[in-house]
Image 1 (cartoon, one colour):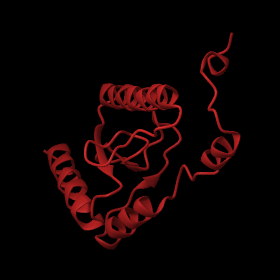
Image 2 (cartoon, rainbow, N blue to C red):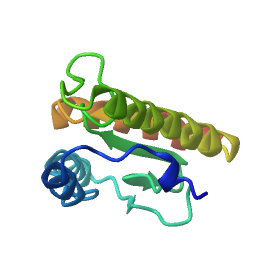
Image 3 (cartoon, one colour):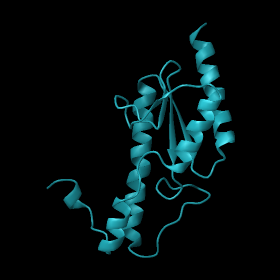
Length: 144
């Protein structure tokens, strides 16, 4: 039995189809953060294919991986919600998302990368401040 057939199916086919159309990359929060970091002169790779989890932004010299997480999909403590319909299926789905996040964080850490997560609700300027500070810290420690 393959992994997908072991999962319960969503109850509503229309909802399932709508969710399949959700963008997985280049979301508005990602693009806003990319623009802000680029404006500051920081250069990075987008969706780096050779890194675990394909970080949204990868600063290869500093070995900093940035993920911009959606509040719903990654269970934000402030804004994460659980739908009323098909609650058990959604709980299992979101729990798997969080577990996958932790696994990719651990895989990147094992490779010597620092992982930063930015919530979609964070202001791009504040998130860029955190990313830039970590980037500067890692670059300066690498040159010592």
